[in-house]
Length: 261
Ligand code: PGA
Image (tube, rainbow, N blue to C red; front, side, top):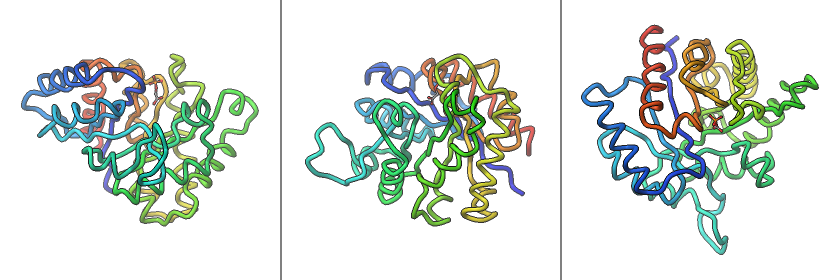
């Protein structure tokens, strides 16, 4: 089987102004010099920074994405941003169902499903986030929670739709807490998710689907995580805000990709 192309995505959350975003991309360009990494790196800045990142990243092969979207293409929805708007602003992907949206803004699986299908309709690649809370893990409910989120978020999707998605396993207890899942714990969850996708959409969709780990990724833990068979990259929050650290994470993914081929 061809190994899946690793992907490292920066989720800046609510950080950086357009000027700071531009400085980040300029620094990344300088750090990469002529040896552009072999694996894929991507940035999800806040909405007001998208234009600056797209412009500063010209020619860098650095896909830009939104952190969220609304499911209607346009209308009287004060404060919301649609898939077609993101696409027209130069975005290629969008994060959907991040736990900070699910928990802080009441997003249910049904809402996440509407957003995911709206992203696909706009030609954007959805990065669908799933993950259990600490209480759910302690109660032995991890697999049931992940399965429920997967079924709900991917309702009414075809195999072709899912082949266009990226899935991110982000255990809620590991996000922004400094507590990372061990490589074995993360691998077990990824293996489970891939097996569920296999059951729902068949072997080739499951084998081709890129599955990212997210939750307190840093320079010390990322190498062991990305070396796991079912971990194809990372969705990085805090450690993605500094260009040197982000470039080093991408370099770590690159060497693991090199070792696989
Ligand atoms: P963190 O965030 O790396 O800061 O834990 C990851 C995420 O929420 O995507």
